[in-house]
Image 1: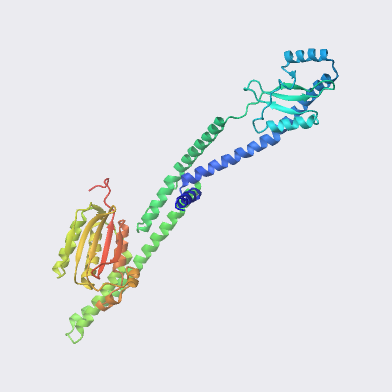
Image 2 (image 1 turned 45 degrees about the vertical axis):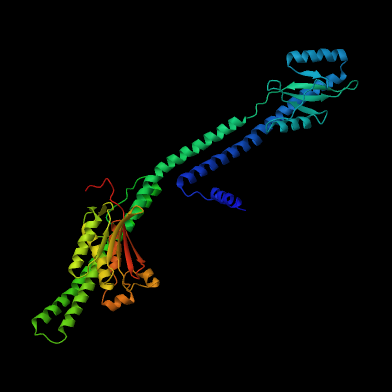
Length: 451
């Protein structure tokens, strides 16, 4: 039983539909060519060779009938003179059974030819084949005599069946042709498809304002044009959304500013401080809305950055506010990011840990599985598994977060969008201390990037 399972797995792998375009196109081309060759072979055999076989069989049978008839009516002396003449002129021999040599016919068409001869001679004697050494091939016809034992007539014939090496060479050439055709097809399809894949990835990261070249086959050019239209529509929608939120922000902040100014100009009264705090909270929420809409759309240029320097800067700022972080910083490779954006990411994650946990604050950096990892940890109350699945979605807040104060639930969503633009990811995990780990993963800076 143990040896059957791997065999089944291998058979399943062989029968699995190929996923790469190169292998699929190679197999398709081979199947099409093989099917075409099979059809051509069928047409050649049935429409060309079989009519020829019938014609030659009737001609040979007429000749054999004449020889048989003469051999039956001739005297022994006339028969010997006739046999000598046949041997000199055409190589035909008439011998007794002891000198006749028989063997199985080779090739796909020779048995059909012998069957046609047997039918054309109306069964007047047996017909056999002798293959010899290639140069002594012949057809043997039985000649029944009225006054003597049967003789056998040897009729020279030359048949050259296709050798296995020729068949192997033909299929080898066919396979090479299929591989070459698939390679040519792949070379024409791969660059536009790769460009499209890169463009989809850039669009998913939030990049806008780029176009695909309309090159390659007509279908690929049409696909690139449709993608450009979609990207242009998304860019226009993002711009309209940003303008809408900016307009709303301006319209809302204007009366808030008037309220703040009115409170500052009049004499203080009980409850003014709570009103000012509410105004500040509303203003902060409006700012988060605008930040979420503009995340990843700024014109900041990426640079080669040592992530440890960014972590130390963010930790120093939070330590001034009374939130020290324990740092465990290794020496990962440089990353290719926008420095101000990365500071916003780290300040948001570390600020969340300080605000909602307040204890067990730590940041570590590693290089793991080809990615630069920044882990922001805390030992706070943490979240439930159900809350963890939805945490990071826009406008989602936990019960503990609501208890800590007002907010919009956009902080982690903003971090996710900012990281996505630089090719990074954000993962939230529960740790052993019962708190939460926010893990940022960034690709290392390519060697060809300018410092």
